[in-house]
Amino acid sequence: MAGIVLGQVRAVIAVCEEGSFTRAAVRENSTQSGISQHVAAAERELGVKLFERSSAGATPTPAGLRYYKRCVEAVGQLESAHEEVRGFATQVTGDLRIGLIPTLTRAVLAPALEQFVPHYPDVRLHIVEGYSGLLTDMVLADDLDFAVVPTSEGRVGLKSRLIVRDREMLVSNAKLGFKPLEPVRLKECGPLKFILPSHANVRRRNIEIYFQTHGIEPADVIEMDAMISTLQFILRSDWVAILSGMICIADIGRPERVISPLFDPPLFAEFVVISPARRTLSHQARLFLEAFEAEIARAQDVWARLIPPTMFPEPASVKPAHRKRPSAKSKQAPPAA
Image (cartoon, rainbow, N blue to C red; front, side, top):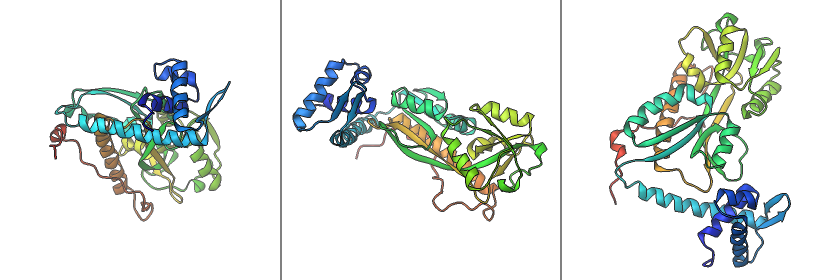
């Protein structure tokens, strides 16, 4: 092991995640021959083949996949050590690149920014709104430090953490006659015309399984991956949508759109924070997530107060974490032990 250097470890990680020596070289700002030499040197030192090479690319062997996972852990520990030391600085600075789905930008982002920006004015924020596929690709390409997306099957090169399990709601025009915040059984509502996310959106599969399992037959379907247009079309028509409570919280108390929690059975959506497996979150990223998750917890508390627990019991495993808002004191680094 003493003969393996960090450059070789990074080369193994890059080839495994990119599936190609060429793409790994581009990512590491190296040459293909340089990456190949690093991997070959690691294989000689370990005495085992790490990749199967072919014209289609590079596929890790069982030993290579095991070694990749350990390398990611080791590099993550190094990154963690760097971030812990940087945490002793008295000022939080640097770039922070965040990806968020529209579900979370409408009601959660602005209050989180209101808390974060005044306390950390030297952090340069770059926020991208998009759907899960785009944001996942951007995280893998290192264009984003992290993204918050619906949960899906894991991908090589990513690590994830559950951030919230949110109730799904039926959103309709007031003219359809649903009563605000009154739980509804979709199977008793008759055929409705649904605006659904496209099949490229991971939420579509969850909704379709819910329909099939509980005998819900839509009268018609429009596919739309445009959240603002979905909300506006509901205002102008008799079409409905199933949306996360996070985006619906902005419509509480407004007469234009009616929010109806799905009941018997309820439907939940899970959202996760994804980030590159080989890196740890920066100090500024962790601070932003603290503010962001505090706003998510606040929104969950609002729904817990508005939805009768006898009609819509909170699952035992779904208890939002209450987090403190960032304070001016948290701007300072902790004293050394």
